[in-house]
Length: 261
Image (cartoon, rainbow, N blue to C red):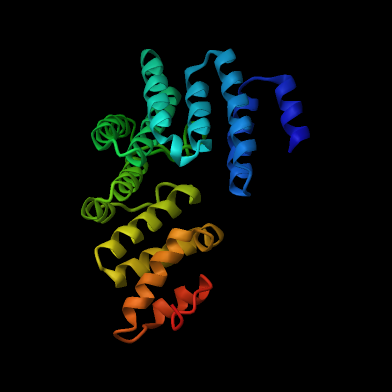
């Protein structure tokens, strides 16, 4: 990985920005958040040197994704600042796709920070761009898969983060996630939907949502402590009744003994 980054940095250009975007995702996923932040920062420096708005947007998304939750308020401000700087260049589709995804990322950061109004404003703007652009058949710029379905998936995440389970469930029930062929986004749709259903006491649908998440990305679902907590809570509630086969299958797959929780 280090040699690949070094060689790509030597040549510079958009290829380095794209490589850092993917490398940051990989490095953070295997448990090295500090290294992920450094990689994302390097990508952003390169993108700024290129002076190309779409690549600056992609690199900013990468930086925000590398930031810890305790910096959510800062992440929200950075997203808004970079999005504002991109606005004069929205004549290009690639810029608009990066811009829309950046707005969604800023919305979730603001939701984590408890800024519901700002999150809603950013989502509204993202929806406007998504409706205008339509769905992408090939993933679009940076394989961000930005379009109406992606914006709705982000909306579910934002509502769930804000604790508005009713809104998360209402939006999720209108979404067919299949146009977004990005497992790392679709798995969060199903887990966020599942958390909202769990909070609402709709355990049967929650189990179906978490089962769908595991089908999309088994490893990520099985390693998500929030998913494990939700499924354990469902199993505890089910003790009052019979444990159905779907819940037993999901619990066993996640390494949870439903009889011991």
